[in-house]
Length: 229
Image (cartoon, rainbow, N blue to C red; front, side, top):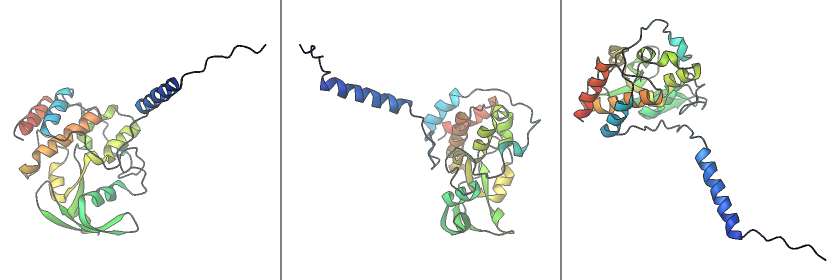
């Protein structure tokens, strides 16, 4: 006598199982870095919310700071946007921020035009010993300032990422970048007031991503800027 036939699993149950598994896989899949450096703080309202969530503390001493702790300058060995593409970070940002770009050897920006957000001026860029410094790459949150507000506690990879993250980098007028130094928003803002809102939004985004803090004076300065946006 043949054994009793086992009841088959209904087809709809198989389909439901596949859907559930697919959803779980999507939810568990890690979010990859957007190699365009797309922002997550896009307006003053979002910036104010993110600012309210940042820790507020006095800055730590600058002792122990060394630029080399953030990796070799413009290294491609990072896990943020544009990292690992075979081009150094400086040329990546020049290629992103300049228009009418001329390249040589695939990566190197030979010339282009910058519509400088810090001054509102148009600057012609031409690669050369005496001309390249006309356009510099600003760390929106300066590395030495970041060091005093939490970056000393990041690991080596995180510090390299911070120094080369497109969200923390902007091609700007060279002399203006030099005048900024390592100042925070309570000490320095771009000469062109039309860019103040975006500048502060960018700083808040970077500090949020890397879990850095703001000083009371810095927080108050950021609030004033965003309130006027």
